[in-house]
Image (cartoon, rainbow, N blue to C red):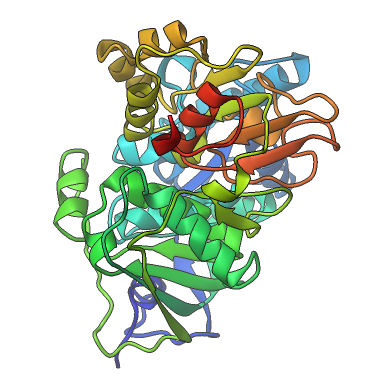
Length: 419
């Protein structure tokens, strides 16, 4: 029976030949992820079960990244709770400051997620790992505690929507623009509890960094998971990092989809999501009168090496608009070190930016970039809900690193070709 890649991965982890959309199955979990916000809750629920040891410590990953370096006493306690649990349970995949990174950039970089894996994270952007040809989705901390106890969880097999991208993208148009355009088309609930399968010649030519960005924001369309079938680019990326065998799955040519959407992205301009929903998307040329107070380049969506490279290229030998604030946050220590070796950190500093150690920071209104009443920010992050980055009267616009860097120079929202 023909199946999609999502259905095949779920079936393999459920010990079944095939599964169908809507079917309830119990699956083995290859990796269970939590951060400094969600781990303490999972730990509390785990302890309430009266069980002393987790089912499989080698399948658990703990990444403090939301409020680290610790911003206050409460955040310090959260990380302490997570750190102590890792030591007590013999969990080696605990990433402290000396190995830190934003979780959804760190795990692929470290080779902890590989094609064919089934990953559950107590964070909605766990869907990022679908770029590697894995099934990855977010659940609550209580669900994660159940995985700590049993190594398993249950799923309802999602229907799959297929998105086909054709044409030739314009310069500076990449994964962030394509996913924003797609969310603008289907809406924030247009893929609710469905798999979003991204394919087509444009995807085939995309780097892994760009693919990770696209799958990262599948949840912004309500999806259960985003996924891209593994190819040569995937295998090269995985083989450089893999410390274990992995299995590649692919959708059958005659697999069933609940819908198929095709986009010709030729001529598409950089996209921007206006407040206060990721679906509120327009081309950048429609927003040139929108002034901004702050720009943030980073996060699990766009804090990777290619993101910093394009920003540095635009900012080279230039200075941001007087009165602007530009915050650059490399997503992992490795990315930070490479950016420093490439001279990009000096470029950012010379342009007037501040550069942070890896952290989620302002993305969720955590710290290091909170907006005051009435302030407006353009960010490479993934959500722009009311109060997401600070005061409820503040506003957040979402865009690519190219648009972010250009807008920091102009003091208003512009595309890279405008500067």
